[in-house]
Length: 174
Ligand code: SF4
Image (cartoon, rainbow, N blue to C red; front, side, top):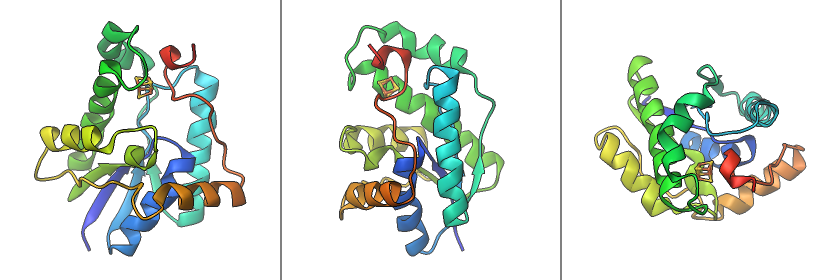
């Protein structure tokens, strides 16, 4: 069975993506790599939600040490950009690169991300970034297709999964 390391941005987005990959016959583990999330209390809420969904779906969740400073060093050059702008491209790239390196370290065959399930995120850009990082290893999927977002929202509602009201970084709060 081929192994996929799934970058998980939050609990709400995780369910449909895990389900999709499992139904496609992959062994799945999660990777909660989101140093973009501020403040620390919010990071903990989202990580707890991701752990809850992984627990329900019987998926192991890996997570690096929370290091928002590293993310900010890279992404703050575009602090004034609106959501969806150049800062977000760097943010996707940062998290996908970390996921790729972890996937290689743990001996996974592929990596991908839950980010494309959100209607607020442009799957084409996310997938282009993943392919640029590692074309032979990145699974370019648009998880919002086939009602992916609707299904994940229904699951989150039924299971009382924490749902955030801003994207994640300090610049997206304002
Ligand atoms: S708005 Fe969201 S995607 Fe964009 S940089 Fe901030 S956390 Fe990352």
